[in-house]
Image 1 (cartoon, helix red, strand yellow):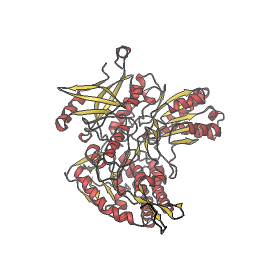
Image 2 (image 1 turned 90 degrees about the horizontal axis):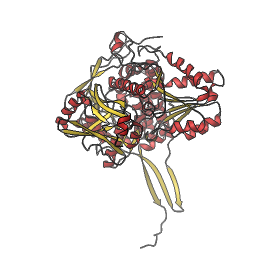
Image 3 (image 1 turned 90 degrees about the vertical axis):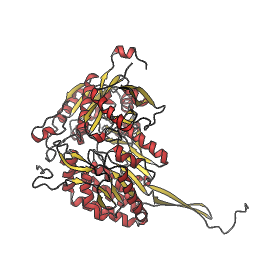
Image 4 (image 1 turned 45 degrees about the vertical axis):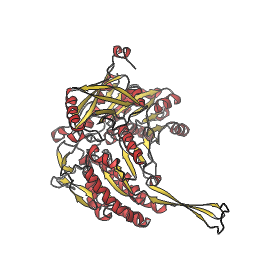
Length: 121
Length: 507
């Protein structure tokens, strides 16, 4: 069951970031300030482990970007589907897009009953 | 009432420069790569200055300067360092309006708050750590007749500090005062959303601090924050922000085997027991104000009381009064002293808040008031304003579980004490909480049962120095705002001294 998706605008930004930096990953943050923002890093920059859940992979052209979230946070988010979008802004954190004057942002919707029943989690 | 002129306008108490470089080694130094980024005011959305876009090269220069200064600074007497802190406090106090207006322009918060809270607290914080340092004692322990353990404090050396954007000056001061008091040199990176006001402060105090002791490198997290946090040349990293970056900073610190202090936010419950409404008196009025504290600083506070739990038997009446109190919040120009709530700090913050209001509605939460972007007209139309919002829903909803960092409170009911504690503790975080009751025993027990580092009992959002502030659970590591923070910036040196003239007899 797909839990994550991308807007075309966010996909465009990711094409540019990949060309500039290399393979990428997302880890969804929580907490204050820029909490709740999806953080985009070089693949492997942020070490995931047994405390994380792999939400899915975003395909952009021929490359794939895994999306992660802490397992504890997933318990509260598991009923929602996330679409990564991009808006003008000045996010902090160490996310790769911030110097471009833009910020990735999560837009959420409830998973449907059908999606949840056919779910893999 | 009064309205301050905007910085750069005739009659303004403060003028921002057109550009700010890095402050390194006691002087302003342009960025190595020559790049700058524009800094808008959230009040109107217009750019008002540009800021050095720092990179690893600039961080290295700042670390060079800090290492050059740290040894001598660490050897100064405690009286000397305390005097520097007191002089900084005096300088801030003498320029309180200047800094308050500068802070409002950079961050968007109402000047009423910067005048009454942010800056006076910053003044007091420096004075507190000046005093705490003078009064700090090491220890002497007699292990046996001839063996004595002396415990002495030593500075860590050079420390890195990464500052959030919700209280740009005050949060910098919370970190700077204990670090400088303890004898460390600092490389500080302000948030890229609010990088300017700290420079107004820096220019005011530059002559008070020896060159290299306090260095500021501006820039983006990935370009300046990361090289600073991951540097092998820092002895500690202090960070306030969110969980993913907190984990990343811990990861870097693990590579260098250095300590961190982290403040990563919360989702603070504000619990109202039924006896609050047993009388319509001053205390009831105070409790309603306590509810409305979710709007302080536009909700951009790590301890925002963004979950209100109200006992069922008073729910309808209390919420009726609470909605009325919330609707009385006056939004307007942040530089007007009558304005109670100003602008959100950035466009992406505004977008994030609106995305939460959207998912809250999708999850079936009911909007009791607010729930919209506010257009305040005129030049403020380009700024980032949200109406104070009350949601009614269930603690499992995401608006009850994530710190929206906006003027949004999510309200639910509880039946009895156990139900209240279950809901209050059903969160990943444990930074702040509020408990309201006329029964001291209930208030005490609830304060102890809530898993949070700071529980306000019959008050909220007070931040006096000498009251420890920090998180349980995923809210972080360490306690700021208290003399115990000195320990977080110090090594313990143990001299174990034998006064016996005799050999042990082992060899």
